[in-house]
Image 1: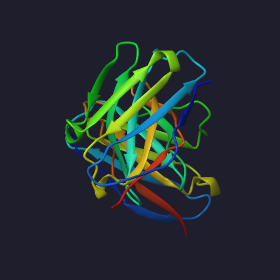
Image 2: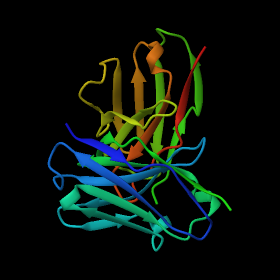
Image 3: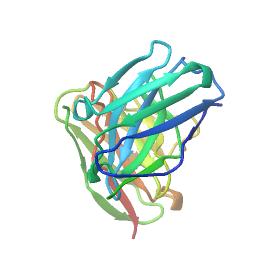
Length: 117
Length: 107
């Protein structure tokens, strides 16, 4: 059974970057995609992008193009989401999820990123 | 980007009630739609995939229907553990946008 464990909460200054990790255990890493979804406080869900670790190819929402980089490391079965040029509106919980044929069926616990001066 | 709307944005219901939530896409998406349930402090949980397929382990009181632009999630008999926020997500074209959510409150 696949489990996804994310890195801990972060506090960042505006203009800086944050890199959130998502370690997969169980299953075969690379047989599925990993998607990243964020949720601002009290708000809805926002899809950011995805990566297929087998190919290393990423697909990003246009909104985040140029600011987000999603990568995956087979050796550690870990996916990463890096968001740069942070602003206060990026304060949110960031989730990774297993993307099996576009069904997000296993989720990480979420990582709170707070952007504050 | 594909726009997703949901109605109502919130509803109050009692245990045992039949509840229906509607999701509408800004253009036809076939049956490329998933439904998720989220409780406070938790990640979302997949309930229904490709419009009408029940995810494993999800109670049969949940059902989904629809195609094209209009979709519904139905809870046939609301249980105490069903009070949560429900989101639809289109998986037809990137970015795979979510609806704004429907919060189900206890009446």
